[in-house]
Every structure is written in structure tokens, then in C-alpha cells.
Image 1 (cartoon, rainbow, N blue to C red):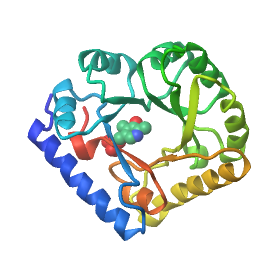
Image 2 (cartoon, protein in one colour):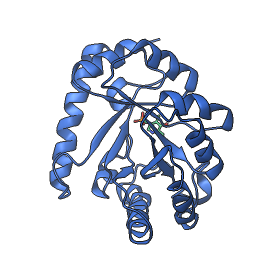
Image 3 (cartoon, rainbow, N blue to C red):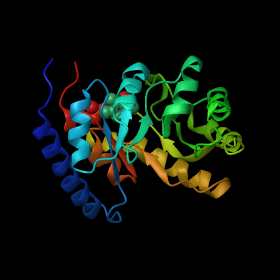
Length: 232
Ligand SMILES: *Cc1c(COP(=O)(O)O)cnc(C)c1O
């Protein structure tokens, strides 16, 4: 398998930091308001270490077994691991025990299990609710109109800390079309803040739609390819 060299990884991270800074300015976003989540799924431990060597501390993983072997191998306490893949019931225990964040909660059943299975000795698991902003073309996420009810249920769960909303829109190269689902998510966050609870996270934007996401208020871009190169 070919992987971007570790030098490339550190260069890519530095370049992304510059791009994010420039986009914050371009769209009147506060400096430092957009966090970089490095999506390291399928990439080797050496690439994660390379990213960490330039102070990248947030990493996103989709595949549980692959992620657990990395988490067990890299025991840097400064690293925060984000689970960003689909969550089935049989994965909740391992996610609750090994991750700092889970971005893909779209059902109360999964949220309940994560709260019950989170060790009370650990800080609460940070949660984002995944919202379907693309209608029928999306495989997962709760419909926007059902989100507020799920928010109100999740905030009752003691071992979870609801941080915000996440979305994976249908892919398009058209900038204006990219902005629409992100705009919708931003509006939904504002509505939830009015009706229920303050949120500090909009997890939106990937390698191909990062600018549109930052333009629409993203606070956390999830970037894989632009850091680590293409996946197999
Ligand atoms: C893989 C993945 C990413 C990263 O996508 P890139 O296009 O490689 O930047 C972001 N978010 C989720 C949920 C993913 O599964």
C-alpha cells in the first residue's frame, strides 16, 4: 500500500492550518474558531505520529477494530479520539470506553447504550447528533424536524455531553450547492439553542467541501484525504 510520506503529512497539516486561517478571515469567522479533526481511518500509526509531532491532537476513525489497535498503540494522553463511523449496538461498549467523542448519533437507543456503558470514572463522552441534511440520498442521520426531540432526550443522559450537530451531505462539486446543507445545519443549531440548550460544535466539512462548511459556520472540519492522501 502507498501512503503519503510522513513529511507530506506534516506539510499538509501546516498548509491546512494556513488555509483554515485564511478562510476564517474571508468569511468573518473568529480566528481559531475552526478546529481541524484529522481523519486517519485506514492510515498507519506512523502517519498519526507524524501528525502528532506537529501538535495535531484530534483524530477521527471510522472502523472500530482498526481504531482500537491504534488507540492501544498510541497512548499519548493529549490525543482525543473521535468515532465518526456508523454505530451499531454491538459497538457501543468499545466506543464508550475508548473514545472521547462520537459524531454519528442519530437514535436514542444508541445514545442510551453509550451513556450506560461509559465508565463513570471517565469524563462524559462528547456527542454530536448526525443530521440528514440531504433527504433521501443520505443513508444515515436523523431528519432535521426530529432533531429537537432527540436533543431533549440526550441531554438527560448522565454520561454524555451533547456538543453539537454533524452532517455528511451528498457529494457535489458545486460550491453553492455545497453550502445549502451546511446552512441548514447552522440554522438548526440556532433553533435548538433557542428551544433547548447551548451547543458549541458544528462538525461539518471534509476535504472537498471545507470552504463551504467554514463559510456556513463549521467549528470542526473532518479532513482525511487532504492530510493523509487517498485511501485504498
Ligand atoms: C472519511 C470521512 C471523512 C474524511 O473525508 P475526506 O474526504 O478524506 O477528507 C470525514 N468525515 C467522515 C464521516 C468520514 O467518514
